[in-house]
Length: 146
Image (cartoon, rainbow, N blue to C red; front, side, top):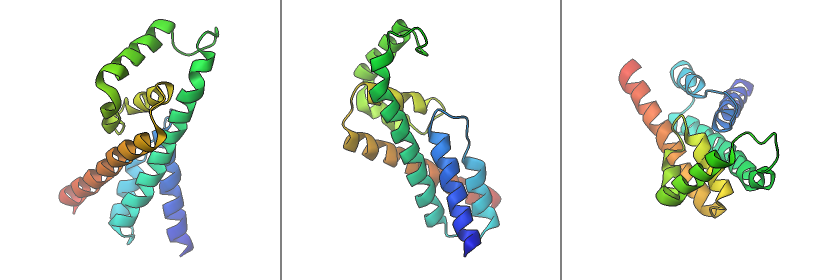
């Protein structure tokens, strides 16, 4: 039982970290638990999806507060880069959040905060994207490695 809690906890932390701007990866842990444990796949998908979605909320929150500092010397992106990202988001809108699972998806979640996307809509779209990714990962793992 303690081993299960540690497995779920480790997966949650990895999925949470992977959704932030930190260099984490959750896929290896997910696949490792899928293949090397008796934990139900639905539970792994649920834990990873919740952790990954909540990690994206951290990015959203950073985006909400980020614009306040945009004129500071240490700000990590130039004014032109920020304006380009805002134009792109304005053009493609909230639907880009369905790509939040992709390698550059973390940037979309930060821009969503800057653009003040309603939090409920942000969480809904990101949760759909993140959950879909883990479902596909679980299916590919099962189909490929048995």
